[in-house]
Image 1 (cartoon, one colour):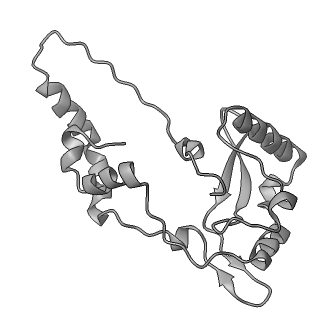
Image 2: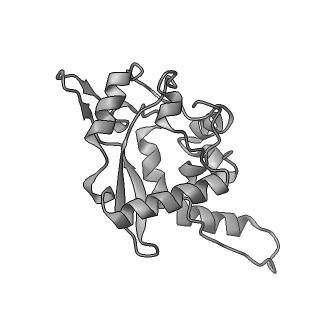
Length: 180
């Protein structure tokens, strides 16, 4: 997503441009150990994900994503002796949804408490916030930006087409290198 038009003067324009070229920066803790992963797996998913219906939903969703090339299923047994260094285990939840039976989400707020008393911070806790704090205030200016963009068009007979696209699942479609 390269900023254009009024977005080029947005408080986060430089970040958006950099992220479009280099990807979003991630702050991380030390890589998880095999023990960390085994304890996360032993803890298991969110209780909402344990019903027969939820499990069927996950199986169907995974198969659909694999068929579209949006995911690759990897068996734990196939990687247990050579774990990817950035692998983390997050709790999955099955949230009832209005337009399909469930919505799958990962609980990125969950810190893993290890049996030795150590804690692996949640993904959210280790996310580096780099955008200017005031950038979120710009969200309220979207309608003004639309009106400004329409006003800048010199052709009085121009037709406008507006659409709203639901991109809330966009993160599911990121291309990753092998073993990322």
